[in-house]
Length: 99
Image (cartoon, rainbow, N blue to C red):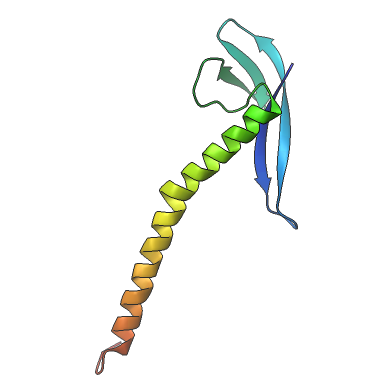
């Protein structure tokens, strides 16, 4: 059995990469895969999992993860950067400022 996870590869041409992980042990409540040379336990009933049973579920999870990342990290960071840029331009435009 295999579990799947999508990741964004940005080297050269950006594309989604489907990674398949071989399940080498199954229990009643979790799957066990090798990840980074170590065992990774993936609970069967968890809402958020590292990898999924089907490619479709893995794609749905990739979309959910990416939307979360954009909404909770990237957009606030961009808003903060824009505010900082406006403040810097206002400070630069003040006559007689000392640097």
